[in-house]
Image 1: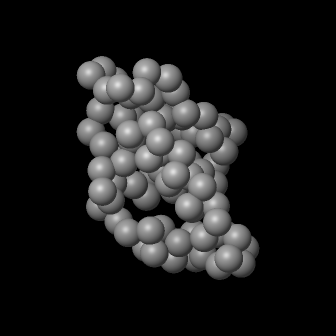
Image 2: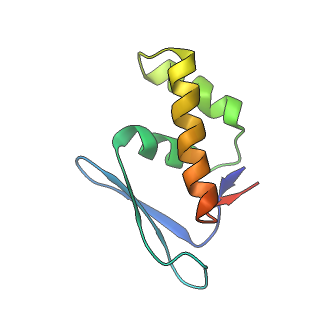
Length: 86
């Protein structure tokens, strides 16, 4: 899976923003914290959910259970706006 063409991202000091750029059904913006932004950045290439979880485990000091829940929540949100290509 990966972020669909037509979505761009911007990372600021304290937040990560994902925005569609024309021709997509979603016309808002998604503001995320740095953790969710890390997940979105992983989606700039073709990855599996398991690969994202492994990358998160290497970067963050959290349990696999918590990271899995966080990844699932972010992916569900991105799927709901049509931002992910499966």
